[in-house]
Length: 426
Image 1 (cartoon, rainbow, N blue to C red):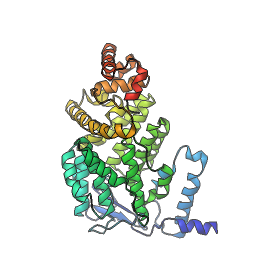
Image 2 (cartoon, rainbow, N blue to C red):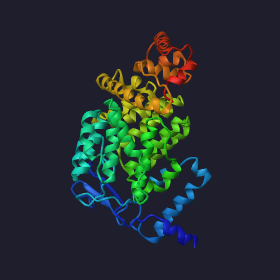
Image 3 (tube, rainbow, N blue to C red):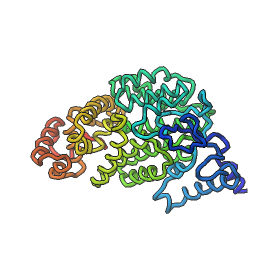
């Protein structure tokens, strides 16, 4: 009876269960059709009979057992294990018969440097428009990104609507359009109707959590509520979900768990998803810096830069500036001065809008009148770094650090490092 119940609850893999874009031409040529390919149950690399009762039951039961094993949970969470499984969602089909998924560029596998080809390879015009908006946003072109995504804010297709709300919401922070940002974020947080499919519910939980966590506000959902629905998302979004949960752990001060979640996701991914991987490497850099593992932090940041640089994807690096605690200055300022200048410009724009929602909604008072260098030094100081350690990390003299921190204290009206915490990011 128990076995029969387990099989009855197993996801149906009889559908078209995965869709990606072959830009690198490294796919199996037997299934590649003009740059697009899909897997069905007879074409999966890890078993040609996934649709059989035995294999469906084995995979589902294995996941359930392993995810509830205490010893294993300390290393791999349920959602990471689900990264091994194909998406099973029943999404609306595009003009080519492929599922129309949220954030199509994030869900596209491509080689860094080929983002324009990846966007052009999406034949459905609506999905291609959203992917274009994604590319513009991640390249730091907030005005064009918002303009491109705005027509889809009221789309009936939830994949298009959630994507547009997310892109426009965060682009509006950089544009200092706070009312627009709040409207878009409210559109994400609104609870979907009870009759919505598991696919849409999974997307709702993911984007509602992301919208909250990235503003350092409490998530309306727990990870446990997301795990049962994770397999309904494409791999690119499952990787992004790992970033969101890792970021939430970071904000709770659980740096080791945050790093472990990111590294598990990167190890278990089945394709190259540059957008999601960029998010993940930045989260790993944040955690490593807070653990004072500087070499590991620089390695992850270097991996993030290798992904970002070929396509100019500098927006996320600028948005994470404060949390990266001097990595941008240490790794980019001397070697890539032009890119560094653009990233810092993004940091000023985005952080100004970000604080206009975060500060009143959280009741916190994150400092808004410090330079990026002052903010970085203050972040490190309130985490227990000595002036000498800060100087070595940022390649300046200890005297410079002392003078900068004195200026910070004067601007904030405080006198000690202990008082810095109330004005810094978590």
